Length: 213
Image (cartoon, rainbow, N blue to C red; front, side, top):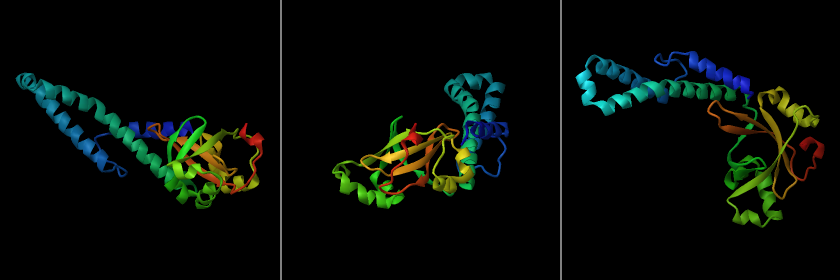
């Protein structure tokens, strides 16, 4: 998702009244709305009765914090809900890659997830690496590519116009294997980075190294 689209989801959520329920609200939002209404009622009571406020100073502080924080929590949750809806509508052809850890150069996927995501690759790795038995995850080398460079025709046909949704496009290669993946990356409104498998070139495939620069 482009950063602008993320901003739009956040802005739209911030403009909606946090006290009024909307169709997309889930149980968590409703719980926070109930807490917000209760906090507002208590604060009105404390303001009207200074003696009561002095007697329950700790609860006054707690209520003030709730009034300050709950609206932003509700808006943030609504933005996340809007993102999930958007992702279902626009990214359904692509498989989400369940990354358990990452840095700029590598991303790690649990072996159990890899066996579901790419069963043929999971069967071939043990034939070429004894590390498969010892590692609980499998690492992928991340190669960032310039989105304006030419991509193989089959990858373009597979991804089509959806490439524009992603902030970054990379080529991932399983450690010890030649098998490249075309991967799209985006950030949710909460800042979580998600990865989607756009195209799998298959086992024993070579890839133009110019794509990785």
